[in-house]
Length: 294
Ligand SMILES: C[S@@+](CC[C@H](N)C(=O)[O-])C[C@H]1O[C@@H](n2cnc3c(N)ncnc32)[C@H](O)[C@@H]1O
Image 1 (tube, rainbow, N blue to C red):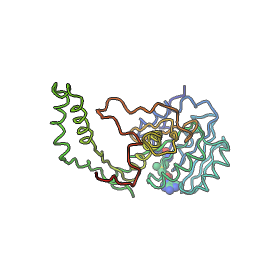
Image 2 (cartoon, rainbow, N blue to C red):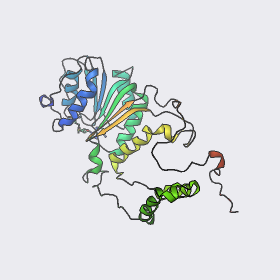
Image 3 (cartoon, helix red, strand yellow):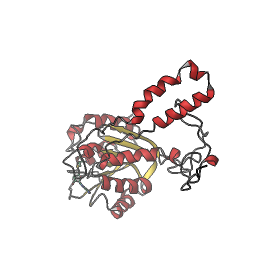
Image 4 (spheres, rainbow, N blue to C red):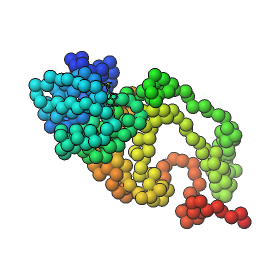
């Protein structure tokens, strides 16, 4: 396992968030003794690059910042580049010059603007992060902050008591009535009504970096999105092995076969939902074709 990180020894803006380093120790620990290639976007005074250099004693550490950053690094293992995180040609060059086989770890502690973060994420994740590698997005809560260019203060989504939600308790009360349980046809009708009543959207805050992080959840669900039975083909597996979201940090582990064919799995639906049998694809009208009234 890796060592403890004492961020107070470095000029980085991370120490005030102690939980960051406990997560880093847990996830980076198994790699600490290896010759990792790490890239950090946004390096301020360069203290975090020195910290990663000392933590990964055999590591090669690259950093990019729009500002000119001068570092005195006697080991020669730190490489600093000046430029924008959204400049994909620069990202390609940094990979070519510092990590020809790809990066093991990429940390984005840069603009905290959703659009730029998304641009560098998809470019680096697809082209320059090794399979099994880790991508970290720091300070994603910037999307909740009024002062940031694309953030906005959080306002709880309005919960409107709709006709459906007012009707639901009465239908729920019917489901377990012996007179209903005894009659399969009636039971099916009640369940069908119930399934219509629970069609809800869970609206949420989608501004800036917060909105981008929520888009990443869709990529994690790609096997369901593209499932041949209920999704939109072509079927494919998620590019993510997992995504872990906590206060201020998102960790995305790249799947070994990112975006490859979907894993074979039975065409089951999630257990535990009250439901009537779904109509088969054959009985559904083709998209865009209206069913004629009898
Ligand atoms: C939060 S600081 C980085 C702190 C550093 N990682 C640390 O731990 O000490 C963010 C840095 O990103 C840089 N930055 C902001 N927008 C940028 C962009 N679009 N491209 C490159 N660098 C950018 C800023 O100059 C600043 O130094």
